[in-house]
Amino acid sequence: QSALTQPPSASGSAGQSVTISCTGTSSDIGGYNFVSWYQHHPGKAPKLLIYEVFKRPSGVPDRFSGSKSGNTASLTVSGLQAEDEADYFCSSYAGINDFENVFGTGTKVTVL
Amino acid sequence: QVQLAESGGGVVQPGRSLRLSCAASGFTFSSYVMHWVRQAPGKGLEWVAVIWFDGSNKNYADSVKGRFSVSRDNSRNTLYLQMDSLRADDTAVYYCATLGAGHSFSWWGQGTLVTVSS
Image: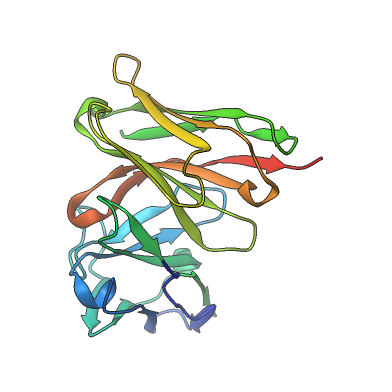
């Protein structure tokens, strides 16, 4: 199963928005509404931001939003803050084995 | 609060074995399906293995099948990953994570680094 494709980097000024894409195939993103997004500050535990394409766990600010169209999912971070500077990666259920997921290549977000 | 703490990483020679542990606290460990996920240096994440609540079912990525074995001890709130016949391409940070809603990974540990090198 191939990795999902994300841009290596994205940036925006504080207060602006940035959108990260995650492109897969009809066997993963396009086939299921089981896309999730994670924020990872190096050296720390990754944090779940979005699950089932657009749902936010309790405690995640509504500045983080998710969507999907066809084989591509997107994460938008609105009102960028300094602490949003981190690596972001997507994941999708791939339906190969029970609970096997495929991950994105990761995007480094820089807050200018 | 929820905590997952991996341990057991280190430098090991090719062909040798290593066992990773993941100590869980702050939630009912026995109620969660658990995953291992890894990230090689400069690479993206790769799903490694999953184990059911009671250990009755397990699945592995093709890249580790036959060499790695996942297990758990619900009485000790601990997840394990036994890694045998290690290869250089197994070098990575290994994370444990809980299965969440919609096939997500709801909680993660900080990871433990495994370096396979002669």
